[in-house]
Amino acid sequence: MRRIIIDSNRCSNPVKIGFLINPIAGIGGPLGLGGTDAIDDALLIESRHISEGRARTAILSVLNQPSFVEMLFVTCSGQMGSQLLTDSGVRHEVVYEYSGTSTGEDTRKACSEFLNRDVEIILFAGGDGTARDIFSVIGKKIPILGIPAGVKMHSSVFLNRPEETGAALQSYIESGRTSDGDILDVDEEAFREGRISVTYLGTALLPDASGRIQPNKSPSVPSDDKHSVNQIASYFVDTMDPEVLYVLGTGSTVSAISRKLGIERNDLAVNAVIGGVEVGSGLDEAGLERLIVMHPNFRILVTPIGGQGFIFGRGNQQISSVMILKAGRENIMIISTPGKLAKLSAIRADTGSPETDEMLRGYWKVLTGYAKYRAVELI
Image (cartoon, rainbow, N blue to C red):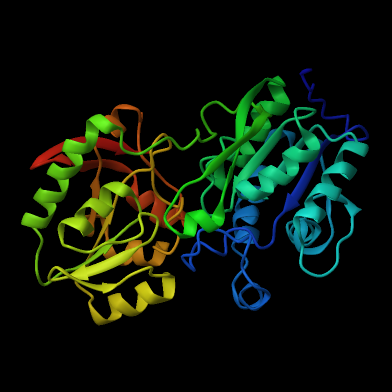
């Protein structure tokens, strides 16, 4: 990939950035649905557009970059791009018009137009499904970069946080260096049933973003960690406070605690227990909010995603940033097997709230066995 030379007098020959937003990406997270591909029109109308907020944060991070004056965003009409760019005062050109609710076909047609306009890179807000649709048109012709706005985001083409978009684009424009990232498609129906069925679709070209791009999700519990899982579950159950509401996040390690209490559950769902009794299963954001109003003495239990390290913001968006702030650090508990932690340099959070993310930063005691802890940094 050629290096793109920055020249303050070169505004007549700008760096063209293809930009699109999947307006419906991510709304399945707070609803506890695992994705948006199968959500009906009624829910789409009633749900807030999460991806627009994530894209707005990303664009704001671009505005103060030295190369911003060199950029021309090539985009789609309305909520797929131009509305946000207009509101943000960003120079742009609309090359694709859509009507009604945007679909994967709109994404693919927009990307074809981006190629026709010789964009240098495509910046998009969405999830694995959006990445899949873009890759089906782009392949490895030009780099792509994902603003994390979906539910699961198993693919390694997404930034860790939207706030890192500006620095990633600046680095690429200065150096022109690229790397590779995998496009993974997750079966959403299987996901909602508690099964992960992932298809590898190919390798995309990415900007070399200096550690700002998340890795692929990896299997959470290797066979040699089964003993650690049992030890974690035993210790947690033995030390539970019967007066506290425990919100049990997603993940097979957390599910072991539920099973130790005699409660079967979907590994990819959120449930809640008090006094060893389940008081909510398959909970969405609204259901959790109702529970903590009734039981203000609550704690949140989470485990990092294997390979990625996220404790919030990937697959458990029903645990909102507001709820996390209400709980506070002292009422958030992290568990993980030693094997999983050994493959992580740190743990992460991407709650959508800078205040919440900042509160979570720093070192945590992570339960790794029966009364065994390890200090791990959240960055």
